[in-house]
Length: 267
Image: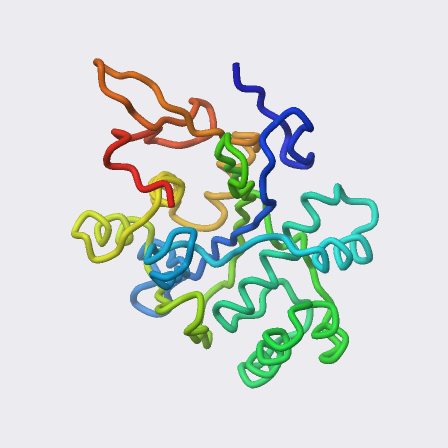
């Protein structure tokens, strides 16, 4: 029997040996005449050579580094360290992968973000970047949305966060190493692209796009999160009419719980 644990705690000692990671779903509201359209989300297409999810379209993110934990402990000493470090990792990885600096109290210009990204890519730590530019982080602007973890060793124990950029254009640039493309799209359009095989999406991304497609705005997402306390989701194999399906448990806010195992890309 699978035991579900709160997302502010590490994987229990008797669980699989996993890699803490974080990813960020960034909302942007279309401007002008398109303002009534669904919110746009920032996605990155990973290089095919990457070990995990090679070639797939995902949200910005990556593993939690030791330096993320150090910065989290300094900035949020009273917060659960697993959750705080994941927030820092999501902010850092977003800057590395897209050139977008989020959750900063001061306005950030495009040239400053570009310089910060260059510094981060050389050093690998977010703390010196913040000190160099005099930026103050507001990590609480990232709201915990979901938590996925495959039940096997070396799997990515990934906390998903959401944040809202508001309305307007922002400068993003692909890093051309881990990723080959950046694009803004609505969740429903991303699903359509996947169905037309214009992009590939792994199982967790597909399930999250289906859930995100139900939200008319960032506030809808926050309301849905409030209705579904976040716990680790462990996908599992279930037999449905004699056929193996990859499924997630009910009760986490997902309109589609699974798909036939043979058709599911698990990364």
